[in-house]
Image (cartoon, rainbow, N blue to C red; front, top):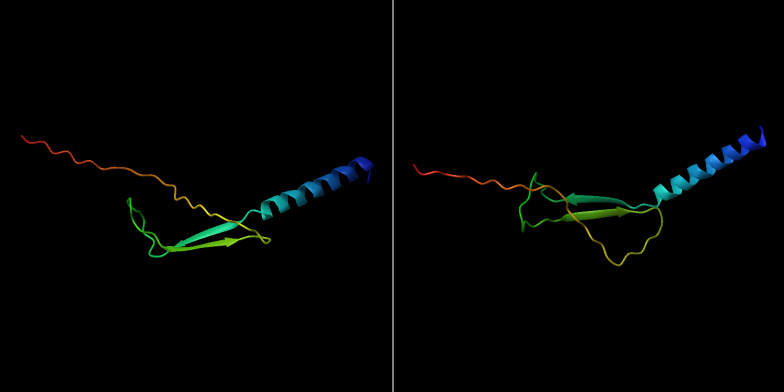
Length: 81
């Protein structure tokens, strides 16, 4: 194997390891809602649990969870004759 191909091979292996480390360090978050429904309205109460899995010991002081979705309004118009 030439020194150029050896360098490329070791460089590729190092990049792969770095990619694995970077992706592996992200926490996995799973939100499980009790009595989950297909839609919710303003001020609906949600309950459930949040499971956070990390690859190494991780401290955190705050946890912010955002439920992001779409909303729409339905307006019924009635016309008097």
